[in-house]
Length: 392
Image (cartoon, rainbow, N blue to C red):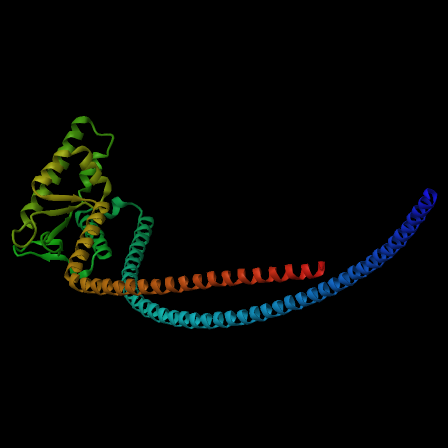
């Protein structure tokens, strides 16, 4: 009984094992089948994902291309608009600047014409004065040439001036030449007769407070020659010096008594010595004569100092004539001042317009820089998008 039960149990166990093995095989087949299904499902899913990714990438590329095209169009439109605006502003600024330039040219032309008129008038007067001076210098040169020729042709000054009349004529001629070269003819009179009946070699007509001045020419040559004689003894030389002093003092005294007339002449007169050597000798060795002449209001003059005196007299005459015409000069100066005030005002307005135009140009330049910067940023974004597309 027991063995049969064991055999039955063994058989049941085997059957159970077989069933279990069969079931296990079926399970394994199911698992393999499910694995294949899962693998197929994964393949399908990967395929779908790749398709979806490709579609997404294709769509994204198309979108980026559309965006890039849109941005390029917008950029072109903005550039066109900016170019149009810049052209309009440039045209307006050019027109305004041309109008301003034309106005400025006209104003400056008017001012230049007025200034040229004033300057031309002044230059004409100055030229006339210079021409007059040149003429007078030419006359002086001509006179000097004649004097040089005369001194060359003459054998000796002693022969010409041997007598007093010749010496007096020489002094008068030299004085006349100086006067005609330095002063207008209507401001002096040669061999003028005064109210006291005395005849002066020359009378200068000068404006107040200077008044009229008498010039008398004296040529004390004989005593001067004796003074230059080195063979004289000391006693003889003193005698000659005394005689020279007496002669000069007499000339000074005569001029003071004859040619200084209150109400008709000034309070002084001039003694013209037509030799520089005699004039220098008096001032070097005869100081008492110079002091005596000053006390008598008689002024000693040589050809050189006479030229300086006559130059001063001419300046005094010119100053007097200027004072007579001072009101005309003042009117011209006032007019010139007003013209320059208008010129300054117009220049200030011109500077304001130019400054405003410069400011507008700078602002347009800043706007242009900003627009250029934005275009550069947009183009850089477009380049980045294109590089990303190339990578994908």
